[in-house]
Length: 115
Image (cartoon, rainbow, N blue to C red; front, side, top):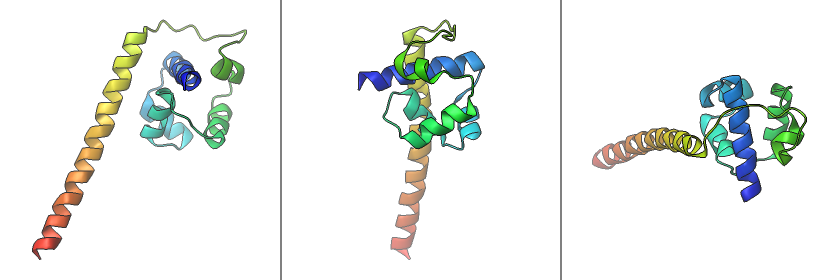
């Protein structure tokens, strides 16, 4: 959905403007890092997350976040390519973590099968 991609991009701009990374934001909101990555990647997210985001970041204009219009748009110099690269780096980190967990599970399965 293109509109969620735009929401993700604006959320990313807001976080960059505040100097917040994925993990900082996740801790503040009580989300996982992958949930924050999903929002930044433009994946659909629920109203429970919207509620937490808007209540935690009181200066984040919901009208700007969801519609792209506001009197106060955060000024952040961001290049779409830089944004894409950062998202890919975050995705690689998430995949490495998932891969490590899967390797542990496979190892445990092999050990239980040998017993």
